Length: 207
Image (spheres, rainbow, N blue to C red):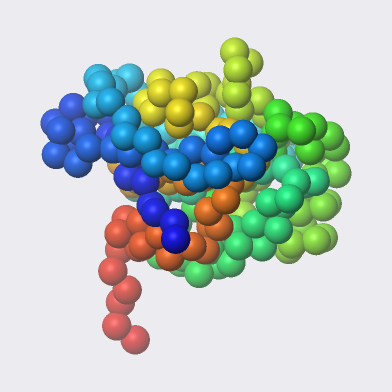
């Protein structure tokens, strides 16, 4: 059984109302545990302060998706969890008309499981999994050279909230604040993830 982990909003008033827990993967076994995070002052930033570069080389500012929930996932092509691309694509197709945006961030940080070029990554994702949600160029997601978005995640959640392996998932709310985090072992189509996404989307219209 998996559990959705409410993310911490940076506004302290919201934090006090909701609280936060984060799920992390520990060691190579990637066992799942829940860790209660200390409520602490936010960074004063949101996801909309960050810009990626798309896998095709164009700017990809997250502010482009202001008002929409975002699911940001660090990905890899040669990982035991690579099949989650299929789940991510299914989630994207299910919810994109209601506003969800899925963004894959290829990274070679874990086990050197994303060694290829951007062109090779794109060809693999499109050819094997028919991926058509946005992909960024290859990025570091941990350590001092991590993309600023992931350094923000670390500042928001603490060390326990940083990616521990490929396919760590971060849900960003329509206001640009962190709403949820799930480790590699939780599939994108898990009911816990879907429920959190549903909560952030406009209600279905009749007909």
